[in-house]
Image 1 (cartoon, rainbow, N blue to C red):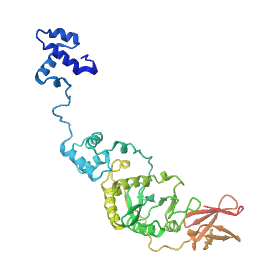
Image 2: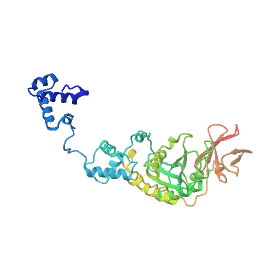
Image 3: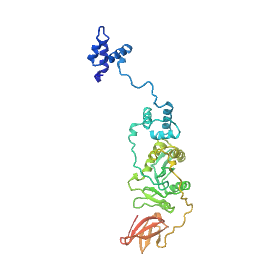
Image 4: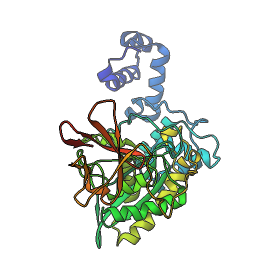
Length: 379
């Protein structure tokens, strides 16, 4: 129908006005307005029934929609969203599937339902970008550990400590700490190790309490981990994305567990963290796991936590030296700085393929290298 787009209602009004005048030739008017007689009589009929307002285009939405999402399902979608405001359509659909609901709409339809009900902030949604993913080959092959930035309580500050299994994304612990000291972390890790066993490796950053900087990556805490038989891996300096899963977890922790809440104290905060950790591990679908929950991919470690550490022993070919109070060892009448973290412990010196260069081992882990020709030591 070749109505001019900008003036369609006016053209229809002009047409019906002329067509309903006494003695009007309606077929000729239809030809001059470029419409068929069927269309012309339709607008005349509508005008006679409803006046000028009836000449507006009517909605093409069907009177009934058999495929429309039922009110029950839509209500269930909104209930999950209200319980977990940070969850998107994929997680909501996976959660409802786990509850054995049938006839669930597509992810895009769930997104539309959330948008229609004012549950999605378009500006905030645009900030979310996928993370580049990699993962350890099995549960407990690698754990990531880090502190999330602190936030205020009614009484003091909370420094959330998170420990995450890299393979399964299972959250082994989220602890409300009053500080970031090594003995605080050691106490919480001891409880986690007792419950889940030991990992093969732990990935940490270069700051306290796991390191001072790139040149001094070992502390009392990391020395303790090494004694337990755990390989300690430090992230690249100034590259927080190395701890990408922890970084992503912290964003989720802030959105779902902390938000704008004001906690009374560390106990109040820990109670909330414990409830949220259960949801995260056993109810919250994870996109990196094909919408499974982390608990489906996690298995406890077979490596037991040693309540009493065994003595440190080295091989018969190793040159063993004890680290002194200043963090140095004596070798061939010279002093080499190894690190204060190893004070009081024996370390082993082993020759390398380069003449005059020796690797320094603490337990199973290489912690430094000394060069006899240059009289220096580097981690």
